[in-house]
Length: 228
Image (cartoon, rainbow, N blue to C red; front, side):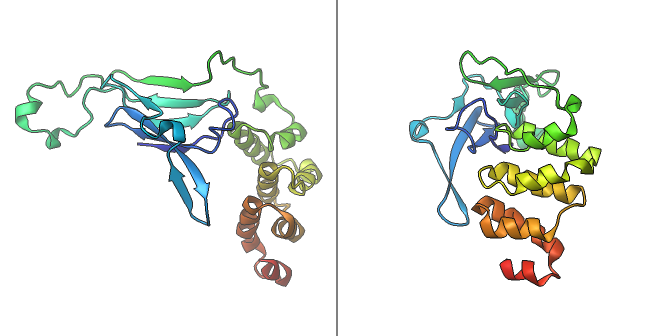
């Protein structure tokens, strides 16, 4: 069963960064809030789900197995939709003779978790967006959009955007954009020690973590080693 961190922008801030866990055997979806009281994250139930689950179905064919952050900002659920999920070897013969172990092998469902009255936003197809515009999308609120823009930047290898990426990598008000910009510079072969030092010295904690990882590429340079 899958565990996914929600990184979309459709469900609101209360759900952003939540962990969603698919419990296939129990026909439910569990949700946890992540708290960082130190380096190690701690997962706790939301207060309004202390005695219930985020989703629990009375349909024993409901078999959530995985999630996906989607282009529309919602969370999608892959539902295997099978009557029996146990391996035949684990089922006693006295029970197995009453079951059709192939029941549902031609089925499956995809659910979209969205707010009531949700209307998908009109968003440009990123494959048709010009490369300079992709840089701005590295700081987008929707995680799928950020990652798709980052992938396209890497695939296109257009070094004319290096200055724009450098500017975003220095913008402490956009930590998500900073992180993607740093890695985009690395993907274009344009990452410099100055980018890393700036992230280590002035970035927010999540940016500094990425800066520490990227600093490995400059480990032989004393300035970076000292900053780390």
